[in-house]
Amino acid sequence: MRRDHRPYWMHAFWERFENAWARHFLHPHFDRIGPASKLTQPWHIELFGPHIEAGTTLNIVATRDAKVRLTVWSPADQAGRISIGDAVFIAPGTRILATRSIEIGHACLFASNSTVTDSDWHGLYDRVDPAPAGKPVRLGNNVWVGDGAFIGKGVTIGDHAIIGARAVVTRDVPAHAVVA
Image (cartoon, rainbow, N blue to C red; front, side, top):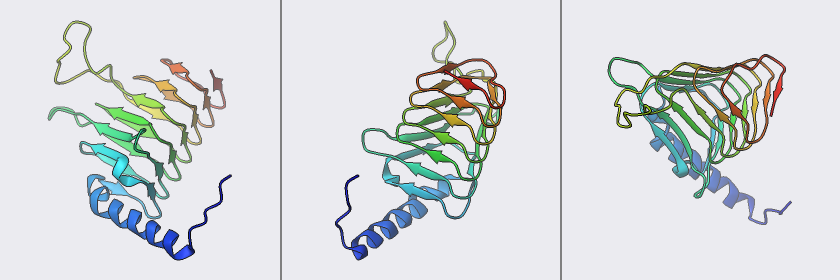
């Protein structure tokens, strides 16, 4: 592990700068965000759409080459939303994309480049459908989503389940299961 040789005042200044940037530019995009949230390099986090809420101690780490994207695309007749529980960690490159509903429980962990979506985003023949059909996605508490995993529409994942690296999940996963 590389040692941080910066003086403490410099580290504290950088921390305050990141927190102020996140409060000014990102927090207004959330319907609700709990206290003690830490958004690292918040200028690389992209929030799009309404109805995004997060609990306490949300931790998001983003980088220039692996942005984190939370997107809600919902026409006026459907109210899409993303709901994130307490103590959730989201690594760089993660994408959470909702047309209907994505509900993430408490203490979930998303490894790099994982994707959760509740829609196919276009039909087989009509690729410009402004209102793509979706089915709600629900992740229970303490779910671990591995590196590059994909969770598709209509999936429910039980508490304490582990989704392995590069897994493609299209069916429900019971509690305490390991899927790879």
